[in-house]
Length: 118
Image (cartoon, rainbow, N blue to C red; front, side, top):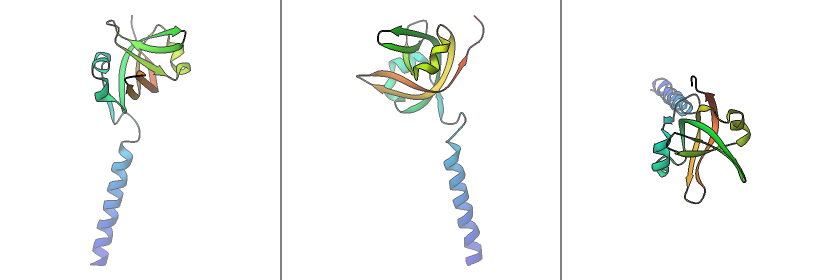
């Protein structure tokens, strides 16, 4: 009985470890959320990993960067120095989204890529 329960317990531990690690990397656990949805329902996506796309814009005083779509739905992007090289370009961003009624919609970058073809 002991020899039979040990492999089962070990198997369960290994299964749990594999499932725990599955959400730690790659594209898993990232929701594709268009900018209009992030703008209109930000609380629904607060504290989650999202991917979205738009054109990088900025303002100098105070310095901040954001992405926006043609209807001016916006999300601020952090850190500024990582998004700044893409100013004026269409990009797809992935990162940690946060919403606060006082600080607005913010995304901390995990990745950014240029979108092709104008």
